[in-house]
Amino acid sequence: MNWKLLKLKPEEKENLNRSEEVSDIIDRMPTSFGKWVARAVIIFTILLFTFGWLIKYPDVVSGQITINSNTAPIKLPAHTSGKIELLNVTSQDTVKEGDYIAIIQNSAKTEDIRKVATLINEFDPNEYKTFKRACTLFPEKVSLGELNMKYYSFLSSLKSITDYADDNQYEQQQISLLEGIKWREKILDETKNALNISTENLEISRKWLDKYSSLNKELITTYELEIDKSKADYLSAKQNNQNLIKEMASIEMQIAESRNRLSQLSVERREQERKLHLDLFASYHDLSDQLKQWEQTYVLKAPFDGQVEFLKFWANGQFVQAGTDVFCIVPKENVILGQVLLPAVGAGKVKTGSNVSIKLDDYPYSEFGAIKGIVKSISLITNEYEVAQGKINTYLVLVDMPDGLVTNYGDELDFKYEIGGQADIIVKDRRLIERLFDNLKFNTK
Image 1: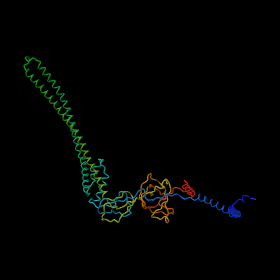
Image 2: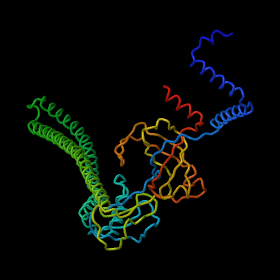
Image 3: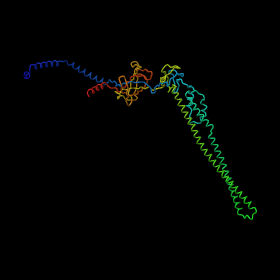
Image 4: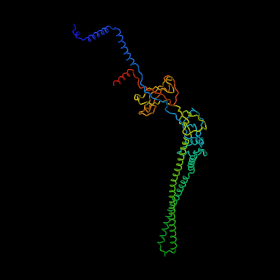
């Protein structure tokens, strides 16, 4: 007999009876159903892990993108107010760098301005040999408006230096002085020879005078006459000798004065040439600067090769207000680039070479598809950018498009400057199971 059961309270005996009934029911459960449930749980778990490993989808960092090119189009504004004159150019015409598109009305004659500008560009103020030919090329009668004074000042300087070279006054004076010096040096040599002869004659006269002076005057009846004659010859020879010495000194002084004048002429010549050249340089650069200023003020011209776009419907004689954008020059050949403003949040995952999916606002994604891009560069610092929600910090990301504007649907989109859209930068393909464990790790740590 089980004494433990006899000692149990009535409530405990009732619970025991119930447990036995439950155990009896459990023992009588069908064995095949339990195996089926176990197999289903195992298969579901295996499928979950298998698909969690096989299924991958990328992490994406998104930002706003603008499609542009390496050479941006340039708008040409009017720098002064006045009536516009179109120069046979229509919208979307091809233009070359430097081509005139339109002129704002002014007092100058455009043909004269362009002719003078061409001559000035070809003129070299350092090439002295070309000055004479340049004088014949530059016209004497032109209508340059406010540039007339600058032009005629330059032309006067050019003619002055050309006349100076033709007249050659300083060189002629120098040649004349050199010839005079040579002639005087020749006379000086002859005078020196005459002085030598005169000196010999003086010595002879002095000897005869000494000889007659030493004789006894009582023995010679003509003593007085001979003495006077010898003395007269001696004095005449001495006077002639002194005259030759004075003549030599005078010639040497004339030669010295001529050499001094020659030096002065060299200095005056250099100063005159320097002054003429400085005047030419100053007037040349002044005219050149004024021509550029005139062109900048009144001319609308192409800064590079491309196509001209009219920003309004312009007609000849229409008034243009200063500061108004008149034309836009679109570059002919460009490398298309994407410029992305990437929010700083999550930007650390973006690397150079990451793939980019570009969806443009002008071409709906569902109809045209997306464009493939590759991250080319990422700015090192952020820049504050204002959006509708407020100010955010963004990185500047350049995106290359190796296939151009060809979408994944095979459509080639037309290029337009500053088309906006969304850029989804694919940073990494991650498995579903990795994301599950990332959530578990985030929740547990």
